[in-house]
Image (tube, rainbow, N blue to C red; front, side):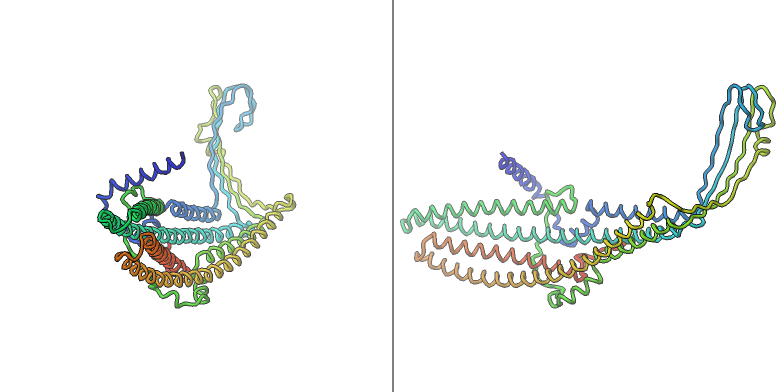
Length: 449
């Protein structure tokens, strides 16, 4: 049942691609794919929102320097015997009371917490931008990998189709030879099986190509992907001559340019600021305050002064300083300081680990790229030898000195060699891209905000 569902899905997607093949008008380059992904990928958009949140946090930190001002107004009805809050006389009546006020307070000294929080907020903006840049770099590399995967599957499909054409011609010729009685009918059965195998290989190759295109289209967040395709850029060259660099040179350059190290360093500075902010709670705080208030009352029985005159007569001002000295707080301040010290040590270890990871990754990437190049060059030599062997086998087969089975074996070895070259070539191309990334050469320049 699962297989049938899978086949139905593949058929539906293939059918959708087939319907739109005539309308296919655009072939995407690698640079266009990366640019589109950077502008539309959902993960990147989320990181961009994190940058905006960090900017808002900075505004909050700046706002802590400013006074807080609040106004108030109150109106009440008193029924029965009550003390008039203005005249201070008890009476049994229905009266109304209105009060107005405004108050302001400002932190004069708070253990430098406001200043350090503001400095931390600026570091948080830097960290969020580094996180966004890291996300953009990762997406670019993923797009490059998906792009090269499509090219590899396209070349493989081309090889399979060419092989099918050759075998179909052989089958037709063999049918004529069987009819003429020059070869046994058993050879014809072998060729029919070979053609069927070729057709199956084409179906697999088409499915692989389709899925690889779908993966890249989803990475780009394309809504319409049925007519999506890429240019056939199959140039396997080290254009930036990155392999001429030594691993030490690449690592030294990576230490200066890699975003993960800059992000870890910024997180370390944020952790240091958190410790300083936490220690600020040990110190006294001094706050200035001021308030103004006025009130008026009136009822239906006793005549009172005009409302506005009461507001003028009942004005009051209150201002002063408030000093708070921490004495005991259940060890909350001390525990908070210790907790932030632990986080600081974790940030130091993380920075050290990121540096070690970078060194290991650079040396691994260099070794992988060098090995991929050797594999690619070896596969080319093997392909040339298999091609010569196939040509020799074909000559023998054409004059009847080799049977169909042995010739098919030579042909299979040639096809496998062609597939190995394709696989090795694109593996080498991708590993070169990784090495260039560590050396500070992006696929496309990323605009830093």
